[in-house]
Length: 139
Image 1 (cartoon, helix red, strand yellow):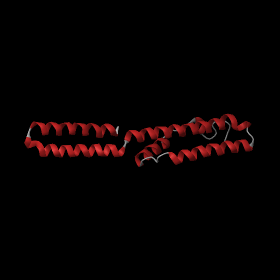
Image 2 (cartoon, one colour):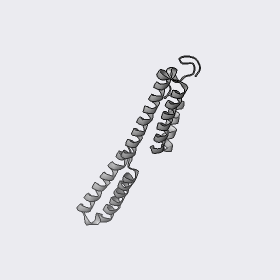
Image 3 (cartoon, one colour):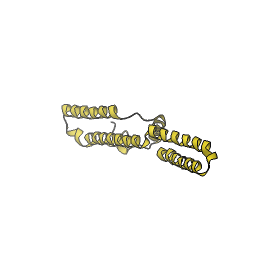
Image 4 (tube, helix red, strand yellow):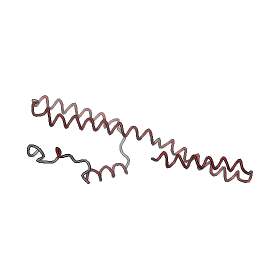
């Protein structure tokens, strides 16, 4: 989204600057100012690199969902048949996966953190299986 908010005005301003410079010699100062603004927006867009960051965030989210799914399946399907040692080994493996993901994932922006927090607190990320007393009594 930020690509559009910065990219479209930058392109438009560059076009205006080019047209102004070509139409009249007196418009050179205005064209130069508009070109500088367009270049500044382009520099911000390049620095932010929003599309790359979005792809990284999506990959990290998918990795966390995979870990969450594996943990849920282990708890709901396998845990009752595992020995203590098998359960601890599975927990250690899940914890290691989460730790590796935490090392490589970029921290969320303050705005993204606040939105995520509001989503969780508003019940947007609850599942019946996660509720106390959901299936077999207390957790």
